[in-house]
Length: 66
Image (cartoon, rainbow, N blue to C red):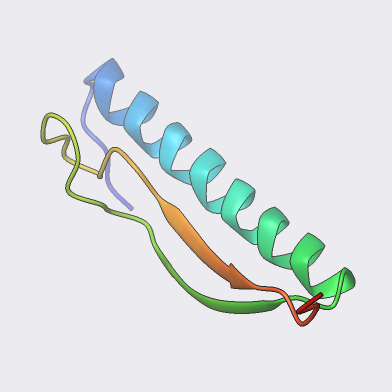
């Protein structure tokens, strides 16, 4: 990976990695609780447009129907 000298580019890369780690942690926690991960999106179209996305989602389903 080649990066420029811009500090914003490094900042965006770090935030992207943090975001990815948080989504993986949520999915791992859901799995240990017996939930099912239905899907996720790393780049939702909310708010102002950022180069690497600005919002993520993780859709989970619980097996408990009570």
